[in-house]
Image (cartoon, helix red, strand yellow):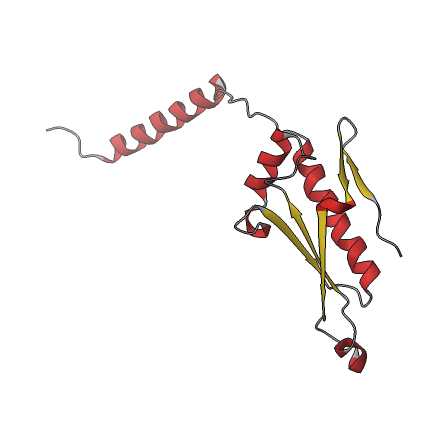
Length: 146
């Protein structure tokens, strides 16, 4: 399976295209089952994408990725995605590209702003009534004044 010339990522409203030359690939021997074959093939795929210096990402998307994906970022702002789920290299490459598109797609949509709500009047009234009732119960337990 040949690698794509570019990766098109869309969330329905916005699109981002990342060309193939902006993605750096490394391959290594993968762990796990596979017998002698696993010792001879480099099926583990490592995708490296420079988020901090990429001109292909809008500024707001870049800042969201840098904030959300701190555990996957190298110190120079490079996003590192590793896949060794499958036993063959092309499927691991496709898995890395899927994960990259998930990360970028998640950063395309801005988070919804939280609108603070007030406590309903009925809830405040209920809480005060409960406190008053509890206070009266404790008052009734006291010794009457002589």
